[in-house]
Amino acid sequence: MTALKLRKIGNSVGLVLPKEALARLRVEAGDTVHMTEVPGGVRLTPYDPVFERQMAVARKIMKRNRNVLRELAK
Image 1: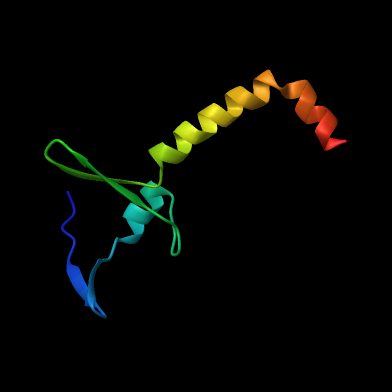
Image 2: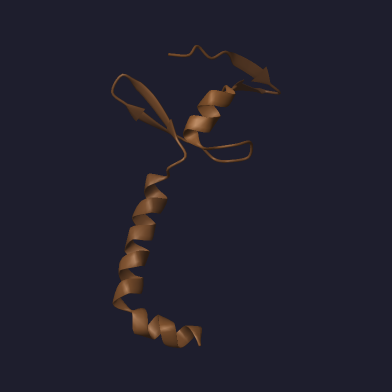
């Protein structure tokens, strides 16, 4: 476990992640990180569950309408 210090940044409070945590999350400055509540705390992840559900629907539609999309691409 790593202790992190909250810091005042303007009118907000920020959390500075150490280089090792950024590497494990595979994120860098400017990326978006999502926080979800889990039993016993919170989880930080670059994974967006809403976007993933939307992409699953899009993949299904693209697979079903592959020929139509191929013709439209011409």
